[in-house]
Amino acid sequence: MENNYSQNVSGKRQWLLSDSPATALQANVGRLYLGLLQFQQNRLALIGLLIIAVLICTSVFAPLIAPFDPIITNLAARLHPPSTTYFLGTDEMGRDIFSRIIWGSRLTLYVIGLVAIIAAPVGIIVGTISGYFGGFIDTVLMRITDIFLAFPKLILALAFVAALGPGIENAIIAISITSWPPYARISRAETITIRNSDFIKAIRLQGASSFRIITKHIMPLCLSSLIVRVTLDMAGIILTAAGLGFLGLGAQPPSPEWGAMTSSGRAFILDHWWVITMPGTAIFIVSLAFNLFGDGLREVLDPKSDS
Image: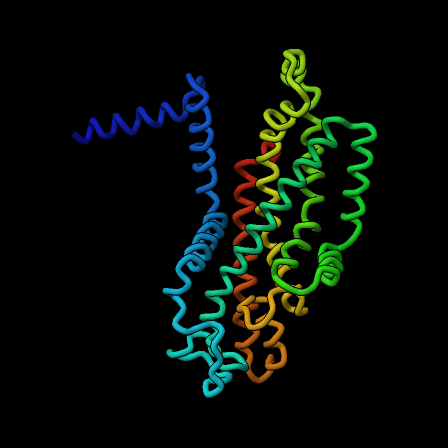
């Protein structure tokens, strides 16, 4: 029985690691398997992935995990230090900081998820069109991209939020507007190296339209580099969102947004350190996790990496 099991496992492994896959499915699954083997060797990346998984589970099960309501005030428990009742203490309104951080994880994932969904497609569309057609189209699109890149991301986001008005939705729009240019640059560079390849010329000779070539053949080849950059940018998105919240331009009170929590806690930094330290630590840990996870993905997905 054990021999049959060992032979079965060995056969599957040989199938995954075959140098001459018989089908596209076998090639894709084998590539994924090799990537997982390489990724699991990076312990820091695994730690980052674990923290992200905990963040996602925390946001999904926030109503079950949080012991108190994150919004209802309780002035009788105002500014209590960390204890067995209030794990991370309470804020100036008597709200449990642990519960607010748990619920704030939902806002964090909401922001980074929507920004990635909005900014990454815009960037890859602009970059691939610019790199494929070149000439006047490339000049116009890249000059627009350069204008956005000329301003610091937070300053530009502040300008857009000031024009749109404070609020989490407007903050997401502002961050998305400032996040797409690097993705466009990466996609353009990848497209320029691909557009004159022999297989692209062969596809063009077969009568494929520019739209089909870009969407079916060029964009998929740009995805690996784009995924790595988006993952690494998650930390910057979190910090930008927290910065807007800190300045009162992101999620508005009483929403349990981590940046807004650090802003309200700065008045108590000397006497009641936990009010600002706890949400600040949450921002630091999650940002670090995305950086570690992004570095691990870069080693696996980036064909130009040293590893």
